[in-house]
Length: 208
Image 1 (cartoon, rainbow, N blue to C red):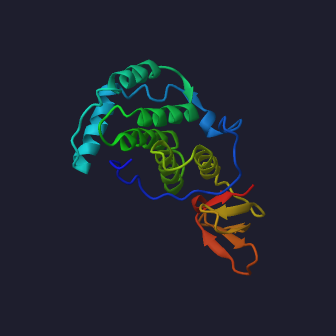
Image 2 (tube, rainbow, N blue to C red):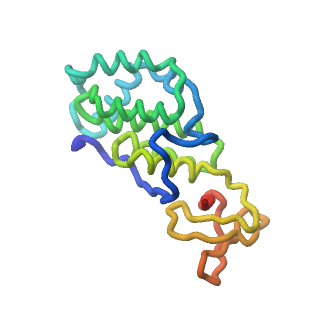
Image 3 (cartoon, helix red, strand yellow):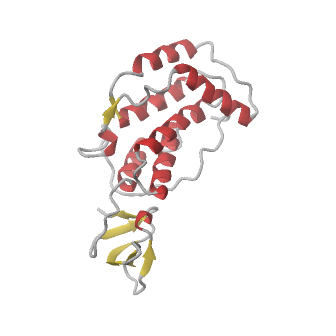
C-alpha cells in the first residue's frame, strides 16, 4: 500500500516449500495459545496512531470497515489459535483496513512484538530475523510459504556438532561443520572450498 512505510531489512532462506496448511508437526508455528489476548482494540488503535504520527499522516478510522474489524478482533482475542493462524489473522486485519493509513505497519508491529516475546530464548540475530520475516508477511511483502520456511529454518537449534550440514541464513553458502571452538564459535568449510570459516552459531542454519 502506498501509505505504508518500510518494515525493515529482510533476508529469506530458500529451503524446501511447505503445504498451504502451514508448518509441520513440531514446527513453532503450530504452538497454540490465545496469542493476542493482551492487545485490546484500543491498544491496536494506539499503535496505528503512533504509526501515523511517525509517518506524518492523519490518523483516522475507516468508516466502512472499522467496526467489523474491531468486533472480529475482540471475538478472536481469547480464542486459542496456532501461531500460524494468528499471523494469518493479523494479515487479514491488515487487508480489511480498519484505519485510513498504515494498516500494514500496525498489524506488523503486533506480529513483530509477539514473535520477539515468543522466541526470546533464541540468540538476538535469529530472534530479529524471525520478527522481520513475520512483519513482512503480515504487511504483504513476503508470501506465506516463504515466511513458514524462514521461521522454521531460523528457529532451529544452534546446538551444532562436527559433521553437521549447515548454510548461511541467506542460503548463499552451504557446507559442513569441522569443529566447535572453545569460545562457542563454529569452524566450518563451505562446499567446493578449502577455506575454513569461523562463524557464530546463530549465523548458520541447518541444511535439509
